Image (cartoon, rainbow, N blue to C red; front, side, top):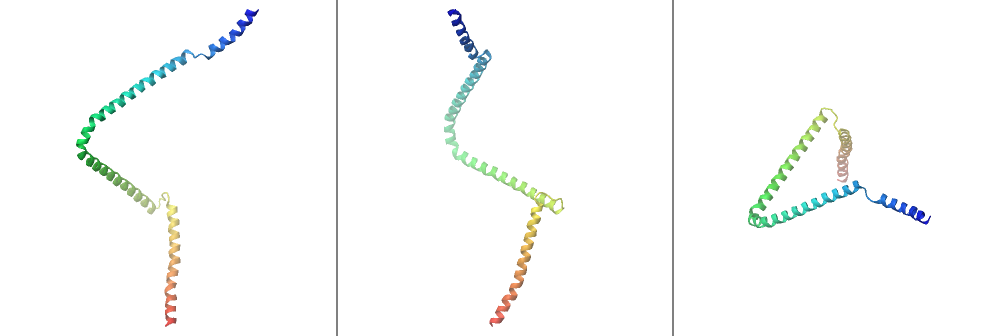
Length: 148
């Protein structure tokens, strides 16, 4: 009887131990991931070593040719920036001209309503300033004639 109780107590322990142990699939996944990770780490180290060796070998050449290379790189950089800026301005001009063409022909491009609103506001302000400016010379003329 005591043997039977001990056997029943050990059986759940063995069952839990068996359930918590990794399956063959999990072991294969882990080994595959570890192999790939290790091989990538080795390749990374080899690449770093090759880069350092190349830099050590190329440094004297860069020092010797730096009076030629530095101005050449600066010139190429300025040329590249100039071409990119010129192209950007050309695209902006073409876009603006296309928008203006659509606006003038009445196709109502995006933002045309805002332009119309701004134009009306400017016209109103100009009209107000025109009336103000028109009335100002009369007032100054009146004040100068009364003071004389």
